[in-house]
Image 1 (tube, rainbow, N blue to C red):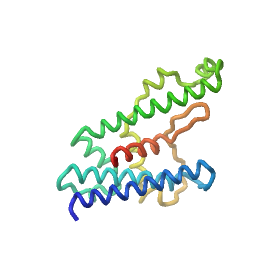
Image 2: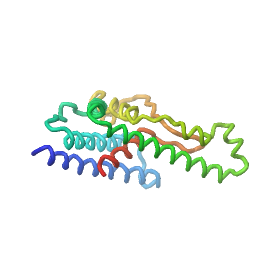
Image 3: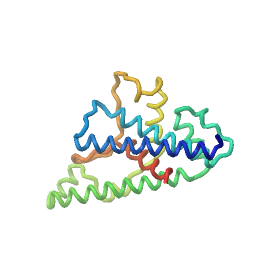
Image 4: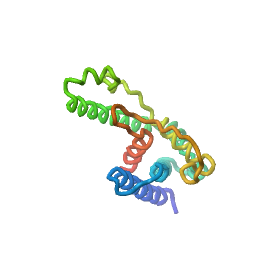
Length: 192
């Protein structure tokens, strides 16, 4: 199999894993299925991103051996980022999407609470300025996933009693699993 064929196969598998993850998230949100933890969803998202990254590497870099990176998506991400600036552009797009989503959520809360918006701001609701100055780096979310995918054969696959801190963006009842959503967006962009 040549690089292009392998890249297409990885991209196809990536889309399948991503579709599965997104459908699982929707099913959990609609209470159609109950999971005891988020590991199954995170495993699917992480693997979708990994396959997408490997597909990108094979399409853009002649002779690259993606197998040497195994599941270390951070190492592959860093290698690709040094080769071209496309991943920086993807990071900027995701930062914009976060700003748009948080601005929208803030406006919904302001509309819901009306005159209490000033009090909400004093109690921690981000202002428009706070949302605009959100500093976002895709690499941080890739690192979070990579650490879990390479540790002891994958923390997502093998049960281990552990306390895990999931980087979240949230305020007033709105909470987003930041690495998951960021990698979903990144995978969609790379697979487009």
